[in-house]
Image (cartoon, rainbow, N blue to C red; front, side):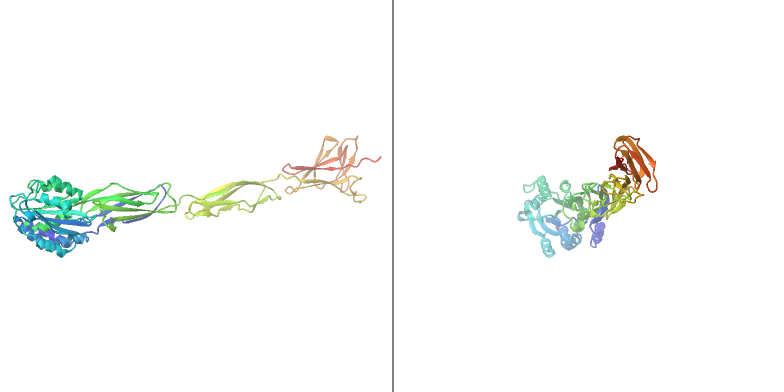
Length: 511
């Protein structure tokens, strides 16, 4: 990277214009049928700096590093300001290393993690170049020490060790190998941003060590001139990859959320796309609103409320009410039929009991025969359920049949309990049939049957045991003269074949 390019970068980074990080849309409020799926295109705008960063500046303070240290000292506040613009919770630590023969300066923590910019400036102001023997330094030991408890990281932080130097490291250095340092960094989930300062030492990556440790920790190596170190730090922090992983933290039964990828890794500060599928179970409770919460983790860490999605799905009511009306059979009570006050019920899975509408309605007069009733009910969601039943009105009641003694037209006498003159009226009444047919049979001869006669017919009965049973026209209001061998059996039969009998006692012939 040229000096001019780095200077331009510093100027650009000094006034960030990053899009607000977070997930969009952050809320989903939909309605869906049971068994349906909803597809949502998600965009996670990642922050240019990882969330809750703990940044450890591990600076080479050997003799060749004077100009680089001066650049860090001059521009430290700019680094702090730019990082905190993206991540206000950022904290920094300052540590230094030299070579194995430099005694207490081999490795020092100048300032543990803090948000105090003044304390950090004081720590950096205390850095001075000196010492160093051969070309390799002892930064492998420095990396090991940082991850072996020398720096107290915060829980849930993004840990970044910014290694600034112009020479490779002894391996092992101070008894610690590059493999051990790498393992310690990985155990801390710390990434190494190696700022490879040009100079007489050949740079951090002269032997490929910086590339090895940066690759193993998902970090990177950036080049720098001695007077552009802070610009390289800012550039490197913004170029780190971020892995976005959607994680369902809670979901009501009946609702589930899945994504087209478990995670995606891109450069920090870019938009990461996902396709989200919200699935409603087929047996999800209709009429209820179900919720899910999804958090989009950044490098396994929470990015804060902006990276939390809230999902609400109202499950549509698609089930019609259950309507119940049963068949009924009733006895006719008049020629018009009968009044049937039948019960009908309706129950909805969401709305509960409903009042059905029936045609014909309960309490109607139903005619003789079968009539189909249809009952319907509609719930609040517009689902309509129905049921049908058959209302049958039957006539199984026999008419009331009587043989009523009547007066002798010539004598106008009213007969008593015994009717010696043999005048009778054939009476038969029915609740349904207004014109009951009446038949006359001979008690002495079952094969004899006369009729039908209209109910109300008046007859003259004559008993002649040796004569032929017969019917002849009568006179006046006596319609017929009926001669039988025995008593008359009167049978009334209605339109539905129901019948009843009565006996007319025939006066014996005079002696």
